[in-house]
Image (cartoon, rainbow, N blue to C red):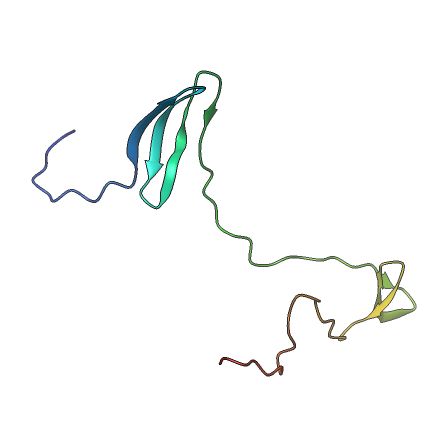
Length: 99
C-alpha cells in the first residue's frame, strides 16, 4: 500500500476464515451479508458476478402477410395495437388502497 496522505475510503469487504467441524472456508464477506461471499474451501472457489438488471425485453413477431396489423402468437393471431394485460400487474387505472 502506498500512503498518499489522503483519507482512506471505507472497506467494502472484510477477510474472514470460518473453521468448524465439516467446514473450512476462507475469503471475503460484505458488511451487509453474513458469511463469506468470495473465497474458497478445500474443494472449490466461489465469487460474485455483478451486472446490471435487464429492464426490458425484445420480441420479434411474424406478421400475417395478408394483414400486417396481425401477428402470429401462441398458434393464433394477435392484433397490433391491442393492449395485453400481464397477469402479475394491475391496470394503470386501478385504484390502490394505501391505508
